[in-house]
Length: 245
Image (cartoon, rainbow, N blue to C red):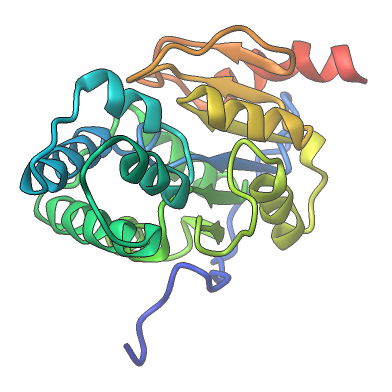
């Protein structure tokens, strides 16, 4: 729509006052969306169940967990393989995405502490990037609920050929920002997302939500983001930088 920002546009940032005292600020913070910033996983699961029920199939909670963190096309392929649903993966994605977009517009389900951290990063002059396997229409709903300039770059699942767990989404985000992935911090809630970020060389904070995240190199696990500040994220990832440095 003319005049509206889309999720793939670079956002012009207002000048911000950068903190000059220790700790050293990261080059950027790279954020997953579903399950990390906003709790849309229940919306996806509900849309999956409804789609499959209309086709005469069943979809268990365990089935739904298998899709968490995957690209939307991969998730659609799994649905087509396990259920009576018919159509192309692209058609399945469009149906599910439309339902989740509608639910999210009705109620934006922020994860505790996530919005506050986003806004603190922007206030301190640290660029935020969104790195999500959801497609642009859902990312746009998030952007519409935030002040302009919160995100300096946005990477969505319909922009990349290889989605998470490939490193490509995080490498693209770093490229758009013009920063070294090793100098950034990623925040993820799924094993697939953590594998993507760590494979790109980004020190990663894992915040398990719907599914557990096994320990892997390049990450540190925290139970949640509520009451955490940017300085906490820096301190948590400092050992990761020292280990690789």
